[in-house]
Length: 402
Image 1 (cartoon, rainbow, N blue to C red):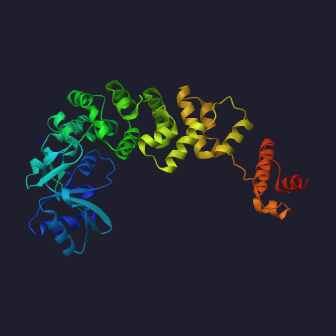
Image 2 (image 1 turned 135 degrees about the vertical axis):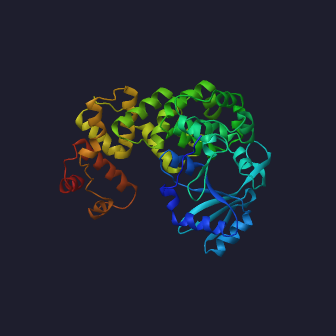
Image 3 (image 1 turned 30 degrees about the vertical axis):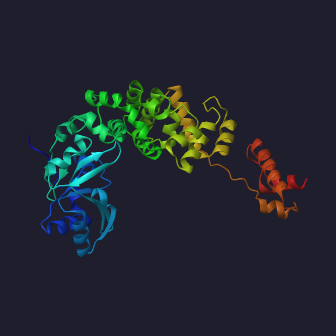
């Protein structure tokens, strides 16, 4: 089979990357781009991070990098990884290696100069692709065929790969969501089902990271159902995902040209409270607030009258409004309904007013400092909202004085 080439791809034109290649080649070493950057370049998808595999030992990478005027940081030296900062870009440069011993999460490695041995320890065939500095692609384990078929397949025996690192179960489904097709590797799926007990070893932080990427994938709804059927979601989250609602939401968003954010996807996918999700997935404070706000929003539908819509929008804000409308719209399964479209676009079409009175105005009006200032301000704002936001500052201050 003739392998594709990345000879003219922009990924190879990065100045910082060329400097790393040149520094390694200058001492007789060999380096190749590996993994996701090669995979995405071949798929014509965005390349974010560029990882490099090399025959040089870590200390040699540090030496040649610094000699060439680049910064080298020992971010994972025990596993052979040095982060090289070149021309403002960071590259993880890792020595070729093979696993000596694994415990289901981390591995002890031995360095090697055998490219095939390095490929054999990787998770999926589509991630075991290499590219030289002149664009030649190397495919030791059949990743090109799988990439063309969009098949996510473990390298070698699925049971062995999973037992080396149980995170690979979740990554299997995440990569199907991001890159897969309707066809799923039966052997890999069976191994994930049989070995899912190992998921209990994973940290909540890593589960959260992989869950976010999975839900943001283009096939999240189908993959959620696949995970439900295998019992994976009950093992991970204590509950099945709402695969139907998730698929409806992502399909609706795609039809509208909308990219739903992680909190919105979580609100659709997992039928548990924001507090539970925050604990399960180690959400950031901002993510937890977004999720709580959208779950707390009162039911939204096109039956709301104009003033009810505007009051609610004012109270919860534009971002939460759009998340809540999108979620309610997906539940209603009326993806083409013009009424829902108008509801969703209300923040873009209504110039939301700003309450014209401040705490300083209250003090200037003679109100004594203290808790009563906030209480009176809230009561005044409630009266302004109930009146349809029409009262101006003078009218509000007059009411305060009365």
